[in-house]
Image (cartoon, rainbow, N blue to C red; front, side, top):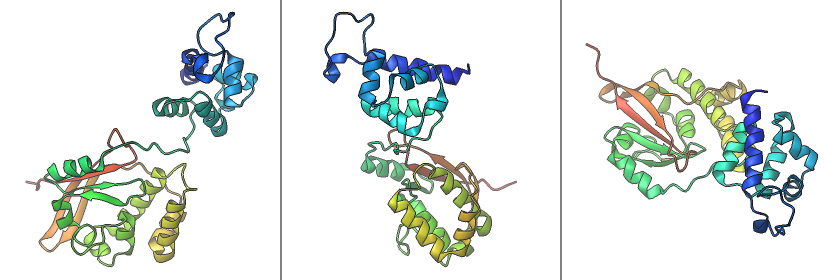
Length: 259
């Protein structure tokens, strides 16, 4: 049996062993051979059959549907970390976003301490925070001339974007591929559906890139922009806060001129 399959079963059994019957209103009983919940009790709490739970504890990942995993999370009162780990072991996408409790004021203070252009995006790529260098570089998005809204809306809908962003067509295709990968498992969210519909209706470039079904991890690399002072080149770095991994901190470090 592959290691990941065995790990799923080991983790489920450990979860059951760590749960105390009294915490779920169950009597302690006199004939418990081990601490924790019996398999039949855990199955009842989760609303699944004991046979199904047995299969899962044997590491049979084909039995681990999203619905079943959700039932286990509710029934056994899993923490956020336990829930995330369970879905990872089962090789399933968690339909519930991993919202954290990041202090947005603290994140703004962090962004302000960065000397390079830096901005913070939420899970739909709306700008939440940015520093002065970013506002100066992206004047039509984050600066006095912009509305500080969605990054994709700026890239695809603002009339200055194709001239400002070097190699705009290729960057557009890559951004959409990154966005699609970033949104996996939550396409039923109303706000996301509305954003995609708005962009598809207003931009042929977005609609073409979106229907291409390309996916790509959000990666760093070279980024270039045409400003009034000439072309400016950067290395892009994307970081995720540990306490709210749905957010993305993007930092643009000026590229040293070649000698």
